[in-house]
Image (cartoon, rainbow, N blue to C red; front, top):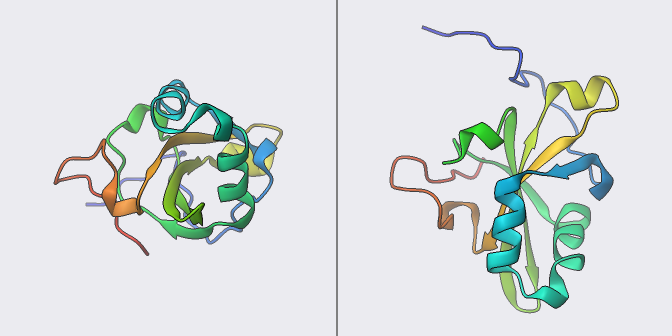
Length: 124
């Protein structure tokens, strides 16, 4: 059975590459502080959004922060692979709202340290 909710993006959309299109969730702010060296906290998310590869991901373990289609920006920075998970929110495409920055970590989407075996990221 399929249910429809207003929070789902059901058509292909271009993923915004402007960092200002994203608002950090509380979870993102905590993960940024815990996982990203202080001197990289501004530049690293910006570089991932502007230049990283884009991949869809499965459910994120913090679903309350992810009210929309989950997408990962993946990039290699200073020899390490980083992933930034964002939630593309339908309202942000239609008006002045913002998409959500949900999490950030070293590794690929399937390496999400917050995920358990049932919620691992799956590259599209």
